[in-house]
Length: 379
Ligand code: ADP
Picture 1 (cartoon, helix red, strand yellow):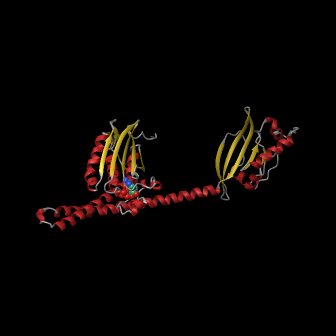
Picture 2 (cartoon, rainbow, N blue to C red):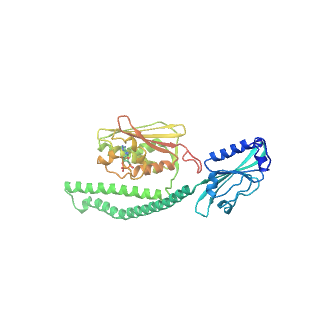
Picture 3 (cartoon, rainbow, N blue to C red):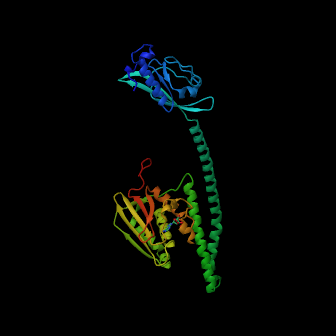
């Protein structure tokens, strides 16, 4: 942009070229058009020109062709001489402002013509950055306290609950006397609800463990996907039948999957339990799986109430429940899917939900056959 013909170097040396005035005006206009404080230095480090923004920033007086009388910038290191290379620095000033300084060397055809120095006032930006950092620290501390509270409360609840379940079992033992039909059904209700509380507590504990710095430890092995799916479906078949639901499983042949079978089974159990919970009697749950390239894709679909489109991402966050689940009287904590997503992601995979044909929900898990990529690489 600034060529040797521009007369800049002439002026720096004090020479008078024919076009000097025109080039000088152009240089001044160009500097004024810049959205930052700017100074142009000649090859001999003398200041050739500075714009008004620069003067206002530093309260400096710039004499054309000469060295400026610097205020703050001279105290902050001044404009030193020597050949410059591209450099960026943040300069804190004594009056509390922070400026970002960029030095851009000016070259043409290998010749060094000087440097352009630009200054931006980033005081406000730095203040917001500091505020954000402070808020982040406060939020992290709050999250730590919530985690510690959840972990402590869950531990405290676990012991009495185990005792309630044990006594329920003892009471059903004929050795302690026969129960009437009504007593047995009350006891069964106590037991069912205690079991549900136990599942909620173990979800809470798992969530707190996932949030703790160590996170969840997985034990990887070779998983036969068809066997794993069959076990998961059979485990929940009784409950699905009781709820009046028809379950279908279809799994295409494919390679062994590198994964933690126990944890993946937890994910499937959660999806199947949800499918049964959110699908009215007479509905259908279908589990389909097939390998696609480097991935296994497993779908758990149902014909139930479905997930409203605007909640299809949010429900994977802990404690989030869609309004149709909350108002429909379906029990739940909103923890299962957050745990499921964490487990799937630790496998290097992804879990998403869409709408199933007929208005239900269709959850799709995509898992890399070879397991998660080595640390540092992305899937
Ligand atoms: P919970 O079922 O205990 O509330 P989850 O984390 O398993 O917790 O699910 C979060 C939310 O996702 C549910 O509250 C519900 O709104 C929605 N959801 C999950 N599975 C289904 C499904 N099969 N059909 C409709 N909504 C579902």
